[in-house]
Image (cartoon, rainbow over all chains, first blue to last red; front, side, top):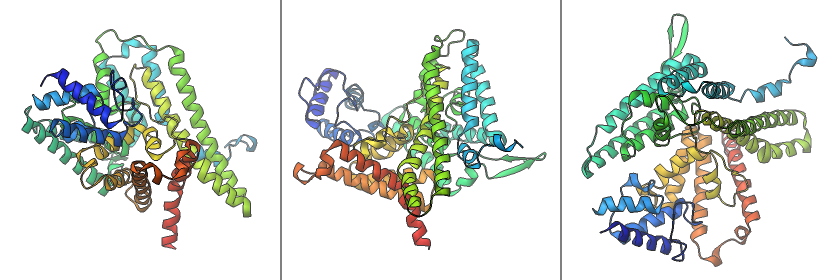
Length: 80
Length: 397
């Protein structure tokens, strides 16, 4: 899976989880930059991403993947 | 003995006693020294300054402080060698880090007085603490193990670890994770460093921090005077004022002001400390309150307990919310007061999560107004500092 396609899917999941429009889900997105992306929102996002990619993020990575970029990096490593 | 007109009131002196003056003075002096002599901004001189600062602050606990750091570093070395770079190796290292955290936390809860310097030896007429690993150092060590286990950082060189461990700006909090310290370390070139901050850039926050500390002292003083003089109905009013104003604002100004000074002093080394308090009172719910109150410490509990794998699913979200606050309470002290405090906050946070996820028609109208929900959050937070002691006193009577 290529990094751009992972990023596109992550953005779709972010948009779905936080009810964002495609425009809102573009650009630099991170925890705190979207009103509902707080600690609880983050856990919902992680669960949704895991379902979408059929992977399990390592426990220690969950608090690290607090931006779309970090999420894409971790997923790229996991699905490589 | 000062003549009577010049003597400060006992209540004022008692209130001032809560100010960590040695920590504040050390941070400002060492920050100022590096600003005045930029050549000091290299690893070895900074380490020497930090060592001197720690010795001044800890005094008879200095050797114990160093021993505590040596133990944490040795345990970190064990964690970093526990696994390899492949997936199985990462998992193994992660488990070693969790084991180190569990051992440290258990020992700290079990033998806290020993960790705080009460275990002493007599050496040449001096009483020296054998071990000093107080609550902020323990939490900082937890972040060190966690980041090592997660592969976020590699085992640092001993002198770099020592500089991080001895930093005069984090001796009594706030938390600066090693990964947040690394950029500073990389910026310490052998001869040249970044330009020192402008006077206004550090003086304004330092002055504001000191003013907040002074307000905290004034709060403590006014509270003591008021409670000593009030009688009858006025005493009840004074107690109410204490619960809803003096205690919460005094604490916020004392800790927030001290940490603001730490940030300002650290900026003189071109070291960025994360913020600790961002207007927590007036937040419309507990989630926002805790996201802005004692942030560096709360982030540790949030990231490592709430957001970890078991946060959402095992056993369930609400139980885990309670667990986060129980851990946080136990970190303050493993006693009835803090366990009750943790239970109250955890239960309320779980209710908040339930409320937030409930359909719109089931939500309480109170929380649709930002002002009303901010008032309710404020009242609840203040009562949580008060109710446990009253409840315990009632149970013991």
